[in-house]
Amino acid sequence: MAFDLKSGDLKSGDLKSGHPISGHPISGHPISGKTVRAGLAALALALSSTVAFAGDKLQYFTWSGYELPDFNKSFLAAHPDGVEASIFGDDDDAFTKVKAGFRPDIAHPCYDKVARWNKEGLLQPIDTKRIKNWDSIFPVFKNLPDLQAGDGKVWMVPWDWGNTSILYRTDLVKNPEASWNLLWDKQYAGRMATIDAVHDTPIVAALLAGVNPFDMTPAEMDKVAEKLREQRPLLSNYTTDMTSVEQALASGQLVAAMIWNASATSLKKQGVPVEFMKPREGMLTWACGFVMLKDAKNVDLAYDFINSRLDADSGKYLIEAYGYGSSLSSAFATVPKEELEKLQLPSDPEVMLKTTIFTGPMKQNDDLAKMFEKVKAGG
Image (cartoon, rainbow, N blue to C red; front, side, top):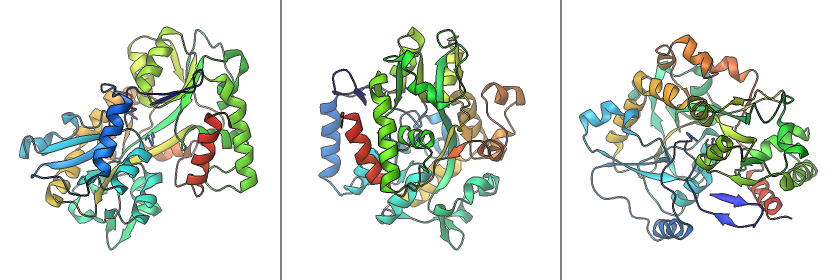
């Protein structure tokens, strides 16, 4: 969805894939756009039912682009036609639908939202003894504090990670300062876009305002709001429609935008002169993974599916096709060093995390979300 600053309207469009979103962040690979009316109808259906899905297919709730069979070949070899995917727009969309009664077996949120799901009693612990490649997951991800459920169990199995930064046209933005301040540069007014998510744009505004994005006082939140108000008139739009952003950057309609790795990878493959910035304040790094719903009906299938997703060739496809990082050291070992350099990915994510901002839980998430909505509406 996109919020158009010229008209003030909420527009439908292709949903972002993979930040996760949250988004990270998030993959940037499109699905067909749905109209707002159809989206509301789907939500109404979710709100009207608390009944679990019927049948013996695994029900998987994920970002667009993450439902591809390339990611779970061994699962499909053992269970042909054994999974049915439903798509959400972002983490908040997923949480709202599941809290309202939508009941998949597995969902794919990002780390910063797991505690929120858990607080609502939506999850069941995942037994790491049943995860065959658990030991291949980088320690920096499998030891995240909010994931630990005790007794060798976790609330989420990490699977993908990536970065959020500014993608800019090198022929239209000459020698920019390596800073998030580019998205506040008045000379490019009307030709910039940013991500419409509380765990993206407000975090950057907080960094530039000298505020801790993950724990702020009311006075500090006011500083962030002021920074966001300063940016608002300079933007073309706030959006999670990465397909449209890519098209606008390719055409020159936009000269810079906050975006995820996959869009940078996609446009470079198309020969568009773009660069994925390394801001001095730090890129944002996110991690997402698989959670099992408390009342999942297909638990054994869920473990089979997660294990399939943790095959090294699944992680290799994620890295090479989308430009995102796999949680698996074994997946990185299969990708040539020169390819990783091209994708700006280190073979060990801990190297990157020394210079980036890891998007963990935000203590004032709900208040910040309300403030962000008010700013976008001109308040």
